[in-house]
Picture 1 (tube, rainbow, N blue to C red):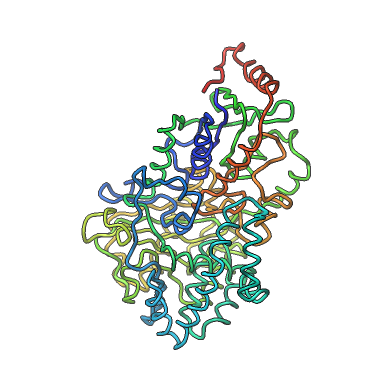
Picture 2: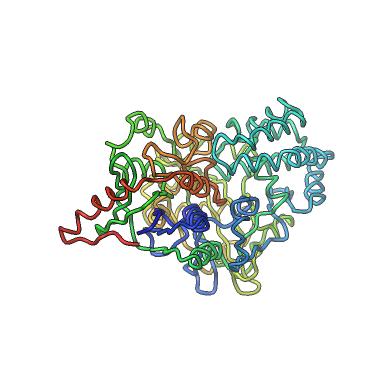
Length: 543
């Protein structure tokens, strides 16, 4: 009988389990899929000679995360690999904005768009140097981040006060226009903002674009050597060495609540697993409160708020096995691990506006990953393992293109959208399509089918927009891992600080659970409640 049950073996669930095990708790992790990892998995499903990252691929937040750093996963064999260049944004005229871990090279790239823009980048970096430590502390601790928040407020005051705060809440279009005379710096900021579901005109998109850009400048966009699954493997190996059982193919169907507290879970097979102290759910908030916990145990206000919960954009992804690297016309895109494909900030605005109207974009913004460029072990020498993803509406109302995509995402629509993405790349890399040996298309429903937390391909477990962040995440008045049910903790990206592979929601939930204690009387109640089905011939709870 474990002290804690963790629902879901995604990165947040695995981080939570590791922290609880480090504190001496016995833990069982139950994962619905046949393998652990959630959205951090790799395979050879496109071509047997090519390693493909199925979901996420580049991990600047992991590199910056004090949570993951404290786990010392390098001891478990994890190694990070970097491309020569972090990020490139090429244009049809051959110009290319390049983000490099060498700040001088980044600045030199931006100066080719407008003299003096390199100095503007240096000013943004100086703001980052001043704020980095307390800002990361505030992001990776439960809300409100009292100690880190005080430090951040002091740094903001010292660094320019309200002017700095104003920059961070600006739309990224406005921030780029204020800081850069040329297009290069604006492209880096705006493209990075659209790693989330933040349009160039959205409040706070400037701060997010700046954050992602500065993470890239400082830490790069590293990848786990050998595939994203290597990060999951390291987390699981660390758990195994501590005696933690990670059970895959075990779908949890119910969080059992007795006496007003979470006391265990029940699986699809009818098995009951008692949790002596806590249940931690690496599950999207609407699924936790709408499926796993009976509504009778939840405040009506929470259920009402959940009807207003907003998912982030749906995602459409294509993986390729290429016979050689992508033949970009712009030299700066060669050697970049990540490439943004959009002809300027105006096209990013057009793309986001089409999604806001429920239209499948006709010229999709593509975020391209050149994985062999970032890690030579991903495919045979001289070839490239690559992918691209773009966003589409959660609910499709129409198609801005000519393929009559309806959102059914059948074989015809999947192929048409994949062709549309490839055409965007071909425009900047003539001959790209001739190099395709094999491809895999992952539609929004396919992504959800492989990971239930990715609702229709929503990769952040809820919008990154400011109205669903901080104290508003996942619903107003929360911002912490505790739930209305004592003993139950939200450990997924639906909790503060949100999406990205950094482990903070899992760590916050684990720390909250460690602060709580259950009485012996509750344990007896749990055993009786979950044991009733034994007398009806079903399995009993066990460790």
